[in-house]
Image (cartoon, rainbow, N blue to C red; front, side, top):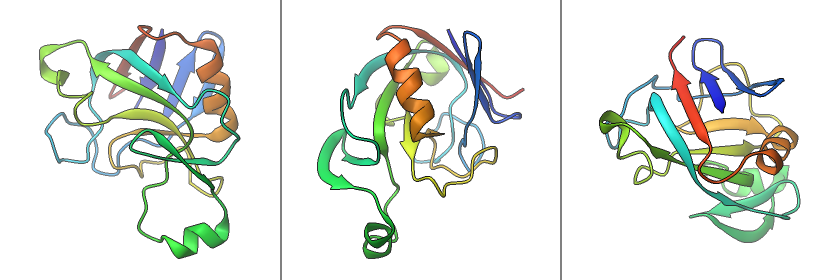
Amino acid sequence: MITINISEQTLKYKDRSYLISSALNGVGEIEGSYCTPIGKFKIYTKVGQDLPDNSVLVSRQATGEIYNKALSIQHPDRDWILTRILWLEGSEERNQNTKDRYIYIHGSPDETIMGKPGSKGCIRMRNKDVVELFENVQIGEDVVIMKS
């Protein structure tokens, strides 16, 4: 089981702990709120198997781009989703819209600050960390996201 603690900005899986970045807008389940939902979830699907680190994903598809500073400058308003995606599906009534909100655990640019909220609802991780997690979890695996 993956356990995400919003107040600590950590994701724990088995004996590993990773710094993450959850939503800048806090927690919540309302569509369009840009909040991170809380409660019980499952991994709906995994996207990005065997992609190179820093591969850019848009609408869960690799664009063929590899994230770099020049690309960042060229597209300053992109919400960068890199390397791997673990797409979450809500397991409770309050978070049933999670999959339709496209809430993921995903990789981020190296300069993204971890340990501090900053996303638009997803759980951001370092690329090397999300690759490690991706390789060890299964579709259908339980995820819990809690405030503290």
